[in-house]
Image (tube, rainbow, N blue to C red):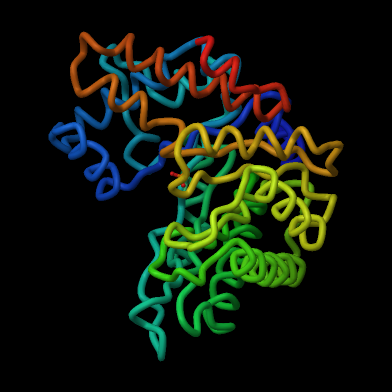
Length: 344
Ligand code: 13P
């Protein structure tokens, strides 16, 4: 029986679970592997990801879906099982990144602003991905805060791309993760939490208008936004409570309640910060949508370091991954605390 978009979306935001973003392109995973001095070969990328997907405790209990890169969706484990089968056997939904990257947006702000590409041939690619087992997809747009940026041109172009992608996904029976990311990195001390609020609100308002215009069914999508958070160079830090209050206020003003769930990106926050912020937001419930995680770095950093590219460290890598997955699963349920973090 084919699952409906609504059923898949609900599964992706199941209580106490969240999404593992393991869809780094071969260029991005190189940076991660460089950090542990491991060569960026297809076999090493496979071994690393196989180690994560075989962490049974984490996968069964805390991970609802895994976002893959094209290469990984087609890869087989050492014993010949496809990585997609390993993920599906754990009960998690396999997903696929389908954008082809954020490219310089031509025009006055070309050196700063980007637009995400990947619409050409997307209908055909989605059909193939569905055949390979993917039931959800991801497209990430990035919005940069700088002097005079973002521009309306950048927000409009990215929101339009997200909407065209999302409607094509739904046509193919694939749930779109709609990811408009307001970046937290940047050079500006004036990029504080209130500036992030303003830009996130503008971005989400525009994105949902474009989704409406394109005919996207909100019940069959998942939103993947940034938290409302100060930029990394901001002169004004914010507490987890301020971040949670402003993020929820912003979503209440922009995200329709028909959307089943919101799964955050970590965006450069530390592991524990990403967990704590999610916890504080869920503790402020009840909320009209599920609030969970779709973390890349904040779920993988500890596992990557513990593994270090050595097969004898696979169990240590899995333990580190399981711990973060469990902590974030607790935060998604509003049940995490610093005491539990330390107890482990
Ligand atoms: P981070 O959690 O590392 O920001 O990555 C999530 C992601 O998938 C970005 O597209």
